[in-house]
Image (cartoon, rainbow, N blue to C red; front, side):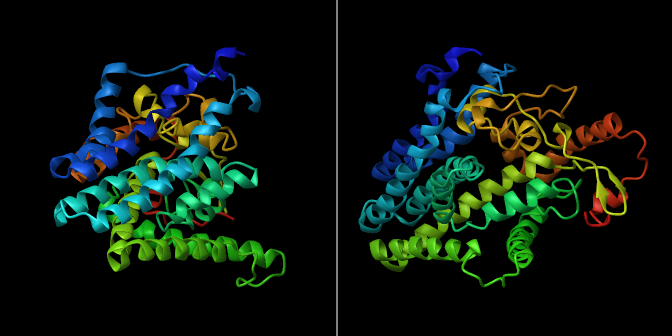
Amino acid sequence: MDKSIGRLSTALPFWMSLGLVPLVWFGAAQGGWWVLLPIVATWYLFSALDAALGVNLDNVDPETGEEHLFWYKLVTQVWVPLQFLSLFGLIWYVGQATHLNGWETFGVFFGVGVMTGTIGINYAHELMHQKNRLERTLGDLLLAMVLYSHFRSEHLLVHHRYVGTPRDPVTARYNEGFHRFYPRVLRESLVSAFRAERAMLARKGLPWHHPNNPFWRYWALQAAMLALAFALAGWGGILLFAVQAGVAVWQLELVNYVEHYGLTRKHLGDGRYEHVMPRHSWNAAHKASNWLLINLQRHSDHHYKPDRRFPLLQNHTEADAPQLPYGYPVMTMAAMLPPLWRRVMNPRVRRWRETYYPEITDWTHYNHADLPLPR
């Protein structure tokens, strides 16, 4: 094992995300075009850094012990109070500010949503995959700040189990534009998450409204966040909170769209599907955006080994997993332009199908997600 993995200097690039906090505050204080700083930094600066720094193909020993991961775990935990104080501090500050017009106010909270989505939901994703109660609770708090608490149930109980099958709402279908994917996933994910929790309770002989249903906690936490926003700035505070939450969820679902676009698991008959493999997620090895997103782009390995903490995620080469041409910042922007997206990605999906499933000649049922639901 490389002992340098446990040093702060090695972990420090993953702390770059904290730089978004002062950018959001600076934009709010200055107004004008400065409110775009968080957006420019997240989408364009890291795209430029990816182009300059290239890819990182190195892998850390996946058996590295928890005692060497202190600085990596700390950044996700420290983020929670920082985001809470920034979000509600800005609701109070902007609610009283006189130097911001309507568009500038919207711009500030669009930037806040980029922060709470790109970083906050991503860190919540890392935290909710852990087994200890503290980290899972911190993940719940981050999701409540964007009114998307059910993401934990949907992701852990539905997405990881059924990715690449018709039962997973989050797997984007071949030729499905983001403008179609987004309303579908908003509707279906909430329903599938609730059904999954209800089914778990039913297996224990409990009704859906039993206190053990985490949706009660989700609703309570979200109500508390909205109440605090109202206490700080009235109905204007609720509106500002809703703006950032909407932007954050849009950011999340853009990433979800990119991660599995067009990739499906082979149907083996009678509702049986092959096991999840690295080839069922798009991989991206771009260095800078993986720093920002704590290796989320090593998504092929995350689905292959969901219990691995982010610094231990392995990069899979083209021999094992399909590769994105650019990091998530560029790819999510491309996803907003369906003709461009199809031009870039559809040929890659077709090559993926020829490489891994040459025996399948008719993909119609896969494209329409109308194969039998997995058992």
